[in-house]
Image 1 (cartoon, rainbow over the protein chains, first blue to last red):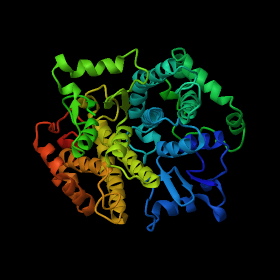
Image 2 (cartoon, each protein chain N blue to C red):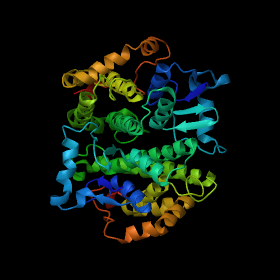
Image 3 (cartoon, chains in turn purple, orange):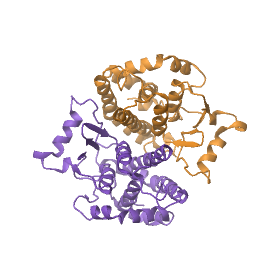
Image 4 (cartoon, rainbow over the protein chains, first blue to last red):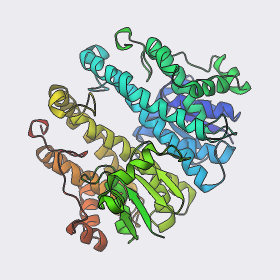
Length: 239
Length: 239
């Protein structure tokens, strides 16, 4: 089965959570919008979003094509991939727990994005700079410690070094990405924060060393963090 | 099976999406935090959030207790209830589609909440009034039409009067709540918007007339909309 991932070609964004899962399972996949237009590209992605004939249109990228199936929403795609490829537990209760953790990560992702775009995604950062500053202060002081402290507690109780215990799940890959992204966006604040979340930091390091993830991170397939994605570095927000 | 729902007792909030599902399936459930403290109440809910001994602690309300299982995250709870009680399709592809729609509704809920709290949930509305005004303008002009237009398209292609076709699913109940809430929060703007989404409005009306939902809405179990929940009426934001 060859998967087709559809996501913006120049940013990690939400697509990165899917890319990490596809890489970890060694999937045969094509990152369609990153291909030249003659064989894909953003125009091909847009036909799915605008597609008048599509029965189950996705609201926004990322979405994954698997045969005839088109699946949208990051956490939903991970639920699908995880169940199929051993990145989610088989037991129903544990599978719901994995998904619950992923949805909490999704909530955190929105809050991270909104530190630089608290008013509108349509406007430039420069047009909401003072609001962003206020929101980032609140995020770093209250929200980031609350979320990261939560995952630290979950790791403490998991009975292993991963969120669900001794076996890697898709939510671990996403938590790796959260730490990597926060380090990029808020280097000073994270240095301080990381002292309080040793288990989360250790999980990040462990994921980064997994052979397929390490190979991916060193490859050209890993887009560098930049100021168009979710995690952006604006010095004035790193307080 | 008697379910225990845990959510803030004085608001509809995210808990309402769960209440609607429990009511529609005629579930035997107790809304724990709304009970007197001697048999429940907020203190009992807080023991789960603070609970040092809980193996799978929820990050925040709502969460649902089903036997020994504690499930958090609104969309995850609905996935669980829907699968168990016929509010989700049996077919895997359709079940993922239902969940995808629910996650898109969850994204919309965050954006609705942030119209009155774009800076911080910890601060009063009055402390972020000018930012709220800017965000609400953007929401009503761009985001609400985009989301509601999306659901209108989905209904147009579903082959029935519900999001998934001829059979009610949990996402329909949530879309009902979105319309009801937006009418409360933005009466003027919604009057204008509703002209462009006849199928969404018809779905709202159809859900409201379902016998168990109608009985629930008329009962004291339905908390009135107010200015502590997700949908709040501030005249200056209804532009």
